Amino acid sequence: MEKAVLAVITTKQEKVAGGAPIFLCDSQEEMEKVAANLEAILDGISHALSDQLHIIVKH
Image (spheres, rainbow, N blue to C red):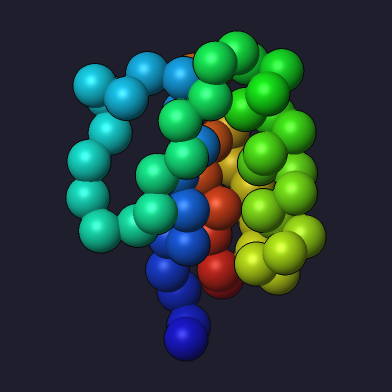
């Protein structure tokens, strides 16, 4: 796999849709913890697109 979005982590479900797995969190703190864990597990890079949305990508 070359470049891909591996996961989406958000606190606002209505703002996301698509083919990558979506993780819905109750708070920004929870979202940041989930993003950090998924970053390590998936061997990807976490990017904060907003206060309510992170993505994990493979470069």
